[in-house]
Image 1 (cartoon, rainbow, N blue to C red):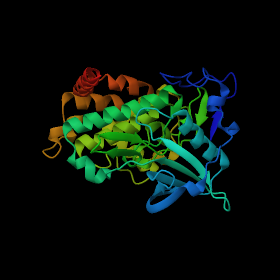
Image 2: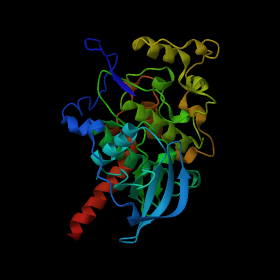
Image 3: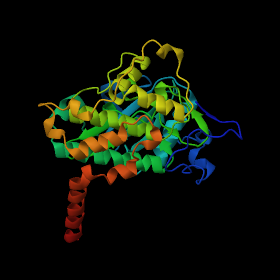
Image 4: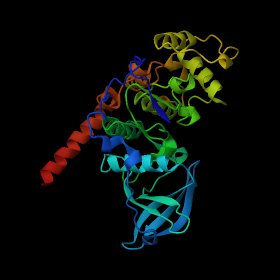
Length: 348
């Protein structure tokens, strides 16, 4: 759900980048209600095996029997038509974007009318297996690739709202990354209040936990920060709350309570009464406190600085996906990319 603020109501917060990404495009770009779905032929696809299930769907490995290509079939559970249209429209708008999962087809069962989304297949390794195997350079490389996907969707006026390791497919052999599951993604419009019941608990930004509805793309940067922290500190998840309220407590134990109150004051946010008895007083913890013999190999001044620019209460103070790509942490990745492009040029 999103609700435009009544006209004349001053916005408490507006995205620092791409605020007009949708208003500068035709209404047909973002008005998913009007989408006419062109259904493909379901019989072109066969299910091979079940690979996962979520709140809103069941996911299967499949095959396109016309060309024998592998694919992934996401069978949607009964949900409002509007939500399905939103996911399809967003995937269509992002088609061809770097590191964005490719939507091949949209089909529905002739009898039950159950819709399915057909995607490219990624030979993913589960993150719980893959992440401990990654080198320091690998972590930099994959986070850089994820920043590309995030900047692409943000530049097109779209917030992902569910960034987490489960939604980042990595084919390590091909060194290929794809950002998947756009079911919670939404178009960003300034002066609009959005539903705070998005993202998975461990990756929810403080704005969601304090019920601040005028959030924007920077929410995804917090979630990325949680992911990055868990990768470099080898602590999964990094903020391990047992409820949404406890999630904020876990964050304050790292970022400090004084800093939280500054944030609340800046945006005129009133904290829900249920926090009265559970929010203690905590000093900001230095990132160095999380470094140990097990994670030392991932730690550098650049990694800590990058993390510090992601995990900030103030969403407007967080680094953007575009700025992130220019961070010193990724200098070796940019250098490799430059050399790689050079090699391609030489081959021509």
